[in-house]
Image (tube, rainbow, N blue to C red; front, top):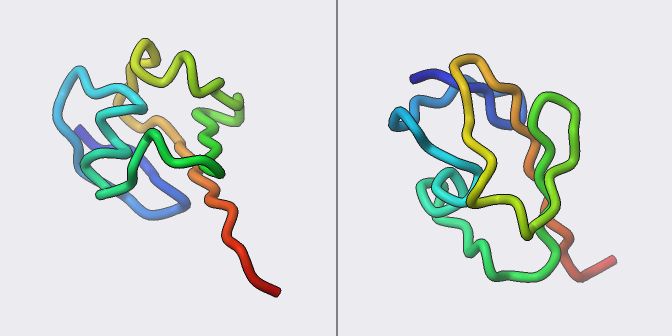
Length: 68
């Protein structure tokens, strides 16, 4: 199924959730400093595994990084 991640079309498996998406994108879901919004709604980290993605979902992933 197709979704949009940070404005880019991305193909993912059916029945994927936010946690699965992060793994597929080679991001560590346990890492601090990651925020995810699906269709403009921020999803708490505790709900990532229970938040299924749908066709054409618009996902924004933000990662905090150190530096200046």
